[in-house]
Length: 541
Ligand SMILES: Cc1ncc(C[n+]2csc(CCOP(=O)(O)OP(=O)(O)O)c2C)c(N)n1
Ligand SMILES: [Mg+2]
Image 1 (tube, rainbow, N blue to C red):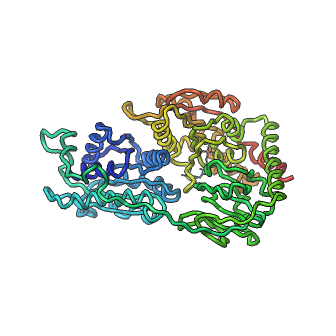
Image 2 (cartoon, rainbow, N blue to C red):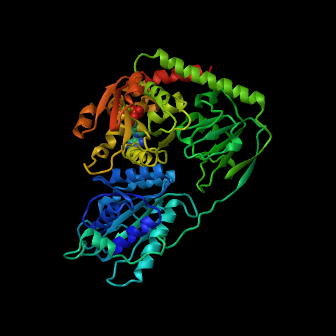
Image 3 (tube, rainbow, N blue to C red):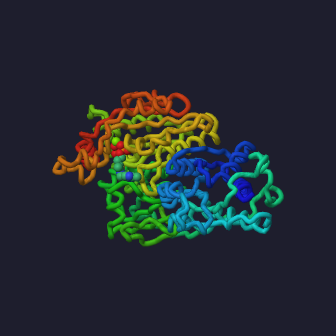
């Protein structure tokens, strides 16, 4: 009864995508979810690995813009949600973790698969709610359970603050399956009623906080549009350094162009996560920094922000000489990047990113892995307008990217028939989430998802960081690059996933196809440090 009530109320609250990881303690939830899936009230995805399942739900939430849930058994199964919960916290993604639990009196008794699950995710969750143990025939629990579900969904969706993860812990006692003779659908039908009309028990009213900040545009200004930047049409004329996930922006400025400019004022939208030149600018005490956004944890790493609000109330116009200087610096940086790429024979991740951005079309969804791929796209873009870009920039982990891409693709091709999702990721990122390729025969599969893997046999990004300096060459390969020497096409074959190996210039043609597939590109990282130095040098001249 309790599981049926919880699932019914989740649906009433608008949850449509649920990921289930099999177990015994969560059997009541599994059976209630199976019935809801069969009735078409939600779509269920069954996965073995809870870590990937969390990211799958995160991708589904990103793709649908509404809370998605992940359900697992007790013990380490719940702890495996740590990475996805932290990402959802920092990126503001509505992720509901429904953890089945043992009755509280079993904690600390030596009972199997029993840990203290309350507050397991600490301050990373927006709410951490534990349901009471079901008492037979006590219908007064119906409202409590339903209101708790509504509270959990509202907290995840961002009621009174930013969206984020929520844990709903559900202690369950034996019997964990319905009595003799009762089928899955009969058990699901035996549910205490929700509100008449099919709506939620408690409808949480949405509202917005409006805090305009006066901004004088006659000062030499740039906008830094970071991860999660919202629309800001009043700033459209201001030269903008946009991360790939910031959405389409007008008057974009290549990140390397910043070296040629000395803006006096910076307006930050979303959270800057990528460029060292941007970090240096935001740390410059001579620059006036204005941060716009609704998150109480506004981004201001060096502690230099002068004003914080939700939107700009602009005065004056962008001076023509400033707009022209920015446009020239931008063109210079773009030419320099394209020129060095054309001059470099050995294929790199930058070549793959350049080929890929040129092949994207409006309506595509692009999912990008951390490490070099997102930086390569930022340097080689521009990504065509109408492409939605997702990347787990909350904590910038290389974990869970394949699962996130599958979730985003499943959401995307469900909402937009014929829609394509493309992911770009490194080889280590791909290998880190191998279990994402384990998809059961009856499970919903992406209709059109192509994973483009730039395989430089290790972590190419480290060649660009301090540890990539030649003086650390003796330790570098093993300690940082961590080559795997693996055969990625063979790994794909083991999971029945088609994989083609191509060169960077063949990437555009290789994108065509259907279902889940991999496009594998051999790239090199040995010349990357020198190549980036040449681009930066040419862009700064
Ligand atoms: C979960 C997690 N573990 C470790 C790291 C540190 N890290 C950042 S980039 C990277 C290497 C990624 O290599 P790959 O995916 O092949 O991309 P490349 O840099 O080669 O383009 C590692 C290990 C991280 N960000 N997240
Ligand atoms: Mg790599």
